[in-house]
Image (cartoon, rainbow, N blue to C red):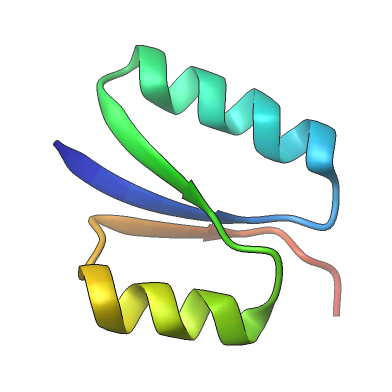
Length: 55
């Protein structure tokens, strides 16, 4: 299964994206900050990273 890391400041947006990706056959992984994203990318080699956090 393809893994996709999701990082968003909004919990509700993360849940929505997670549900959509799961139904599409992906395995979503939610990371709540940039350090967590870096760790997950290193550990998992995901198919994609979705980062919509404002800077």
